[in-house]
Image 1 (cartoon, helix red, strand yellow):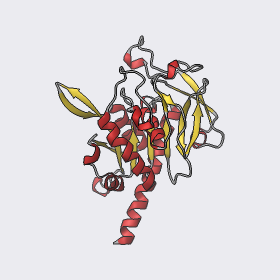
Image 2 (cartoon, helix red, strand yellow; image 1 turned 90 degrees about the vertical axis):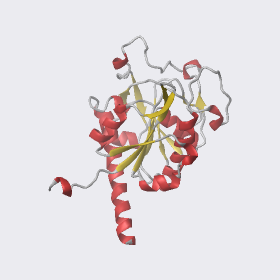
Image 3 (tube, helix red, strand yellow; image 1 turned 45 degrees about the vertical axis):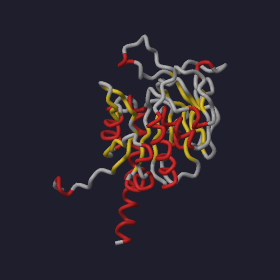
Image 4 (spheres, one colour; image 1 turned 135 degrees about the vertical axis):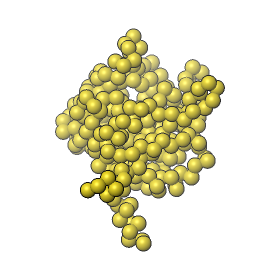
Length: 263
């Protein structure tokens, strides 16, 4: 097979955050997601700018073979889940909210493979009607799940605690075991689980660490940790991206078959 005969890699949309650089807005994503999608999942990531209602979400979702919703230093504006700001010192990104929340809804409606990471699982939970803890470490009985800022930045995403996987769940099937180690870099977390979501993993202090969409036709999973930081060294993190990649290719093949049948 020559290079011209190779099938193009399936196209996966990936959320972006708005960053200010030299007073100008930039739409950005951490390169670790791009590399994990390219190298482990075997797909082509396409950054989706945070342009809100300038985007036709139904049309965009129809052109994609999958969607990744990333982590971020910012948090969802609490009015999206019926709450007030607990304090004013929380970083928000309203342009991202205006993009990822409706795009997630449309991706789920159209049956796209969805992989939601950290802020992404929180967005998935909110889209499904759930709520969040704005300061998880202040909730009685919960541990501090934020990254250890005393460590060099390159070491903060290392494995830090176990999670227990739900028996018979999607993550247990992918992992092949009931417990895995994950990293932890989040200040917020799931409070009330959204309707139509299944709990896939729980930390030792009871925090919901992963969910899946019930009765989803494909991979539609959210995790609270950061597998993109571990995919090259951790077997389970790599397995998650590979499982997502398989689902994306199946979706792409189905979309191609429908196009040929309609031609």
